[in-house]
Length: 377
Image (cartoon, rainbow, N blue to C red; front, side):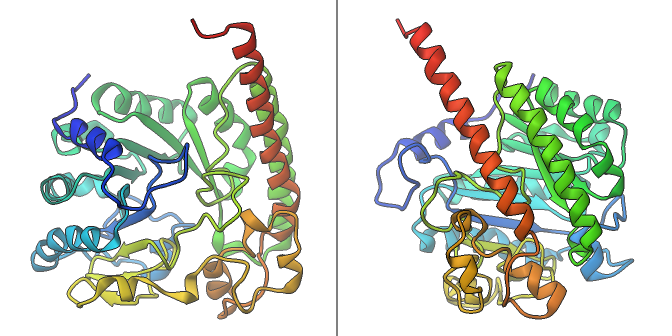
């Protein structure tokens, strides 16, 4: 297995350093509060029908960031870091397929570590190119998420084992978009992920957001999924629930909105424009050449918060409002042309969020029991 570089010690120093920059609450000090999401290219080995980029930039669009824009990006990221006053930042590589240009990933990470206190690095891939990767270019990537697409679980296992043995990642996540094929095999994917200690992340097919029959099937499968995960908790497995409903939820008991959308998130497109949403390639608020980047990164249209105007009063009284937050504003914008209204996942959230909270409670209870039975020496 490859060894990590001196950047590891830089990250450890960043976590430990008390420098007045904003960080998460106790227990979440290492959680990133600002996200750089880089779409350096739309080139890809696939054309998945559920892909946000494919659906919005159009078939045949293989735009790649030109050299001048890329050079500016290497300056822009540290500039935003100096201004945002956030202690832990995350930098992610998406696309397109980022493994097509690992040389650029290395240049970005080198610039980050040279010009900031360091950032967490992650990469989202379909894994098609995993056998030809130059791992030297990815030595500072800590997390890799692999989209299962339509490949057999056996092939997914092979690809993730290559990542485990050749990379420096500290954890891997299996990503499945719940199209008809993956919806039917969600339990098979879950069993594989749990028994190999991988994290799981499930997305619905956003572009079927108005399909009532599709949502009915998702709810049915999530019920089965929660039953299965409760069984794994009882067996002593660690079930990570934070990615199971489309978006990252660091805690199911937060009082304020957990979402950085429109506030602490900069999604950069290949042409150098940036916007507030990972799922919306067309809505932009500025470019990396503009002055005053934080002013343009802040975008109230995408604030993911149940207190926003346009969120129905019933959402503000709902028992799961602190997680649902009235639903993703981008979903409504893409499907209705307006950010007003309640979540397309409303009925699913009402039933499944309490069950995911219950999973965390069961795990906490199990840990307490284990600690009482085997107290630390």
